[in-house]
Every structure is written in structure tokens, then in C-alpha cells.
Image (cartoon, rainbow, N blue to C red; front, side, top):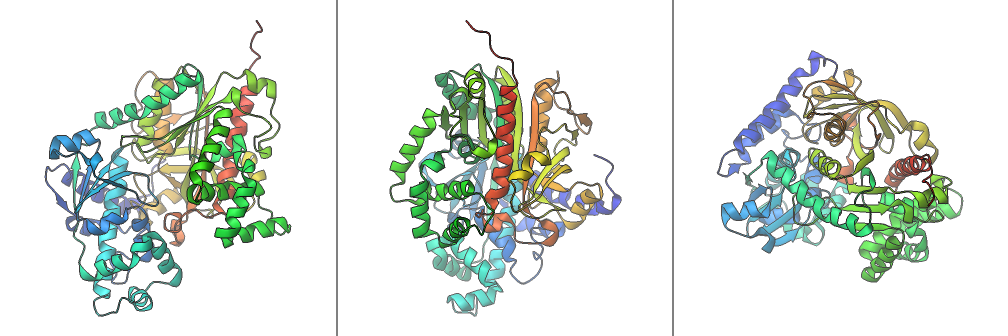
Length: 563
């Protein structure tokens, strides 16, 4: 990275002090009180927690934390972080897999609950950098609300007024806590929050071992599909975009989707009416893709519908591999390109040469994007056990310092805070590849991205430092992925603190982000809101560009010899 302006150095030091504080404390073999981290958290001045030191409740920070923790945290005062169930058993003599499995609404992790304890499996140090500040913010805001509710009745209006929450924020808190809302509010009024945490293990080898266990069922699926030795296009995105774009399965369920939307989602049904009346420029396919998620997750007959969907996807050469039993909670999909039906591919991808498609020997491995440093371990596993890496593509969400939520950002430089490396890219995706299918936002290429340690771990001075260096995209995974990309082509491990030219790699490289947060405006983040229908616009514009790039790469290959 170019030398950062000194103006932001104090902000960076505050973040680094916070990280060192909890990192060194977690080396202890005993429990650590969250109380002991509050001072460093406040001193950091996180842009996600701007009211941390104020007496009023920071609803944005509370919502962000609540969506990243399971509701069981309300009944727990001890959080144990570990790399594997075996590690928990060795230390505590207990099988956490026998505990109740619980989930957080907006962060994929494996949580297990028993009594007053939560155990969570972690995939890399990034999980610690994400989870610890989240727990600190949660405790701070819980205790503020506890104090404010003492002389207030717990009816909805009085409680909301005491907390200083707007109607929209209060509604989102209702959504996050669901049927437990009233009981959780009563718990907040009754008790202060005093959480303790402990880390079990945390070695580099343990994280690599987790990634190896994650890869094994994917390798087995590839073996069964006959693509174990195939060239691989590795994609880090989500588990709905590519499968929709390349199979058109949602269109096969159109009647079911629209009927379910009419009955259950007035907001999305209003979008449908606008589309059909010609009052919206949005894509009908995007509406179906969004509605399909609700159909398969919420419909009373979802098991039958999922079965039909699985049959269609299998016929298109697609195998889903759920994440099982490791801290790496990233599902995967394997696409056998030669089995795709060109007539079913999203028309926005463009014409597809069926003969070239059938002749393809390659496959796509799509991974539900991991958090931070887990990306390095995942791509290392894929590359190490693959016959050939034909391409690496990253489609993820990021905060933007110069754009709007829903815009698409395409970097040609990425600075990785973990390794200190700056990577200069020959990005295979350009604004012209995305903009034609982007209705609500803009596509910005030639941007610079910084891969940070965690979402809470930035303050205003820190962001100013990057912005003055023309770094406008703040994300978590691209830097670790690029460290792994370096090792795919070079004879040694990735360097530290160097400027690295990533042109002429020997494989295709594309990195695209859609803007989900605008930290400079302290606007509500996507993490507090959850993904809405309009968010599909940028996601699918980028996914279509990646799908087109992969298929064009295969079509450009020379024809295989006959006989």
C-alpha cells in the first residue's frame, strides 16, 4: 500500500490496541470478562458503534449485534470459541454436538447451546475479530437498555420511547427476536448482561485441518460426478446466484412463486404489479429469484418443492454439498459445465454455443463466501487438491466510501491488512460487463479495495486514512483470497508487506463487490436491515457477468480432437 497519511495513524493505533488487548487476553486458559474489553472498545470509536460511549441506545449497533448472535445468547453468560468439537471434548470432556444447535440470523456459524453456555466453532482468526467486538457491543447496548427500562412499563410504546428507538428500528428488533421479543425485553429489564468468553485452541494448523475436513465431501462429490481431475473455476459468492443464472430453475416454478408471493409478501407483490404494468425497469427474473428463496424456505410443502428443485438441478449437472461438522460453515456447489442446458441459462448471459458447452471438460466449484482469513484456507485446499485452476472469481458485499448501497465496485488494487500486501490486479471483470444489467445502481471499476480485519474494527480516522490513499472499498475476503492466489503460481508462501503484480497468473481472476454499507454516512447497514429485493439487482448483475466470463472462456478453448 502507498504510505498512509499520518492523519489516520491515531485511529489505526486505537484499533490495533483493541485487537492486541483481546488477542493476548484470549491466550489465557481461563474465562475473560467482556467488561475488561469495554474500555478499549470505546476508545476505538468504531464507525459501526458511534454512540457506544453515550447514554442513549445505539440501535444500529444493537441491531447489527443481535442479527449476528443467536437468541440463546439472552440466556447465556458464557461463550466458548473453539476450532473443533474434538477440542471442546479434550478440554471440557463434553460433546458439544449433543447440545442444541442454534443459529444467528445474519452470520453463518455453528453455535451450540446448553444451559448458560454457548459454544461456537470458528474457521479462522477473523471469526474472533468479528465475534469479540460484536459481543462487547451487544453487552454495552443491553446494559444501556437495562438502565433505561428500570422505571418504565414493558408495553411496546413505553419501552420503545425509553430506548429512544424509531418505529422502523423497533420493528426490526421485533423481527430479529421474533416470538421471544417480550421475554427478551423482560430479561433485559431484569438483569444486567455480564458475559465471559474463552478461546479453545486457535492454531494455524487447526484452521488448516478444518479446511481439509471441509474439502473432503466436495472432493467425493466431484469424484461421483466424474470431474475430480477437471479444470476448476473457483467462485466465492452465495448459494443462490450462480445456480439461478445457470439453470433457470426459478422460471420453472414461476406459478408457485407468484402465488406464494401474492399470499404472503405484499411488498414483493407490489413490485410484481409494477413490473407487469410496465412501471418498473427491474428484471422479472430477479423477482422470481428472490421469490424462490421464500418459496423453498417458507412454503408449507417446501420439502416436496425442494425435492423437485433438486431433481432439476441434478439434471443440469449440479451437486450441492452442505457444510458439515467443521468450523468452516460454507456450503458448496459443483457444476459440471457440459451438463448445463443452454436453453435454461438466464437470457442476460447472452448466446451460448451448445457444442462448445457439451465439449467442456471443466467444472465450477461455487463456495458460499466465507469470513476473512477462512478464505485463504479454503482456496488453498481447492487449489492444492485440484488438477488445474482455470479461474478464481470473488463476488461479495463490501462497504463503500464513495458510492451508494446497491452500486457495484470492481477493484484493480487490493490491500490486505492481514499480510500487509498490496495486490495490483488485471481484473477480468469491467464496468461494461455489469452495467447493462444494473437497473438501480452504477458499476464502478478501477477502484481500490482494502481487506480489513473485521466490520467493527474501523473508526473515522482509520477510514479517512484509506480514503486519502484512494481506497474506497472496505471488505473482508479478497485479500486472503489473493494471498492464496499468490501461492497457486509462485514457488513460496505469500510475502508480507510487499507490492505484488497479479497480471499473467496463468488463470483468470475476477473480483466484484456490491455495496451493502456506507459507513461515512452512518446509515443503517445491510447487516442491520437484512437483504431486500432491491439488493438482487447488483448481486445478479455481477453474477451474470461472472457466468458469462466463465462460459466465454470455455467457448474460446480449441475444439477437442475427434475420435
